[in-house]
Image (tube, one colour):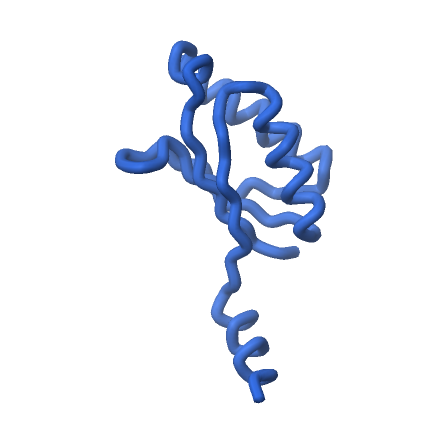
Length: 97
């Protein structure tokens, strides 16, 4: 499984119903589970982003599908990136020429 970090910002609709955010988190985790994605952590944050998600997905396509499904609900907009752990980076660096 690959690790992904997603940064999210509430939309105008999402911030109006911010009190429902913990409930929506659980619904998101169920949506993710159906796609084979494990949501490791969810943080509500201060600063440039409102939410940070850490999750594991089988591949980029599944991670993208989850992000699109989440976005179409209209509560948050996300920016997702692939994250490489120490073991993965070591393997990548060993392949450098």
